[in-house]
Length: 602
Image (cartoon, rainbow, N blue to C red; front, side, top):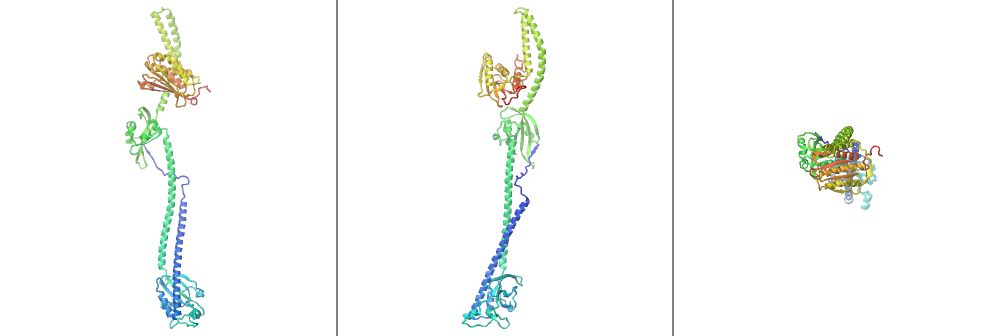
């Protein structure tokens, strides 16, 4: 037989179970938050890139306008000089193209001279730029597949009015035309139609940086998402762990209480064969303390070979309800029923041994009491019938013996024979009287009496016999004993029988000690101890049996009657004796709450 322990996952307590939809909802919310943050970061990068390129384009436009204004004012530039300014400016890094157009969209100046006079590809009307100096930008696709950040606005380096003011009122005809190229003029010379300047900036570096930022943003977002999901999962695991730990603690406490308070003794060893646990019942049976034996080898504190079970356990033989007598700490034999087994886990690994002890002392006592009661019942019925049949002939025999004895002179052998016959008849009658008393039901007259007073009265009755035998009587009354319901006459009868047995067991100079005190059941306890020869162990269990006696002239009914009287009071009597060490008899009477009322008693 082997006990297998299956360790199951503790059930979560109420509130610790979460639906998968809740977890998916939390993950979805985290995804939305992270996605929104990523989109916001991307838009912010786009706005920053657009702002930087727009400011750069605006700066270049102002630079071209300033250069053109300076050339026109100081050096009377024409179209070639403006073309050169455009070409030189377009050489700056990240500038894809730079163009100046007239109101009709024809290119007046371009970093690519081959495109002069062409129509500039634009998706808006030049009329919207009339009188407007606001900067505009948009993304355009080029023929080579690249994309450009195009910045444009109205181009007006200088007006004729300002030119005349700065040149003393003289006007200058437009000099931007020439053979083979379109001419362009200052706005006021062209009827007020605006010119426009376009700068195409390369967005590849910014887009590369933007892609890097986007990748970093996505990586950071993914990390944040993982951290969020991981944190939520960790919170769930921590909550489940706390719930499982709390339930495990409750289960462990419950199991400890159940095991500790079991009415049977449990002794468990670990995998190394050392004692790991003893419950309270095992401590009570073995008279060992768990703290003192924990960690020791069972062979050091338990009887040899664990009461003969060690070999069976090592061979794997199951032990179920095996009755035996074991001698534990105090050396006294204890009747026990033992079951033993190996403890293995789910994988079949050895964990330890388990011994289950059941104290059979009370069971044996009850069995003996039942057998004794059955024997006494049969003997009582037989004795009552026999006694009645014997008493009448005894009376006739005694009368005839007395009649014939009176016919012989005193001192003659015939008179002595008649006296012996009368004495034997009286002794036989006394035996029959005791037999009838033993067989008769015990009708007790319960009264509330002081036990110490009854003990003192009974010791006065036995004092002459004790003094004649040279035995000293020591009475030790217990203080504060409550009055108890009992039959004083019958209880004194039982005490006198116990006193006489004690006196007969002692030599002159012995001591008869009588003590009183509270008993375990709340009633009084009386202890009668002598310093006599003691009772051998083989005779100790028989002293209350009828007709068992070790005295040559005894009837064997005295202690049987004592047992019957104490039992009729609802009490218990126990004997502790060793050969040569005297005998101690303990009588425990029930208290007023523990006594069962006699028939007809209120």
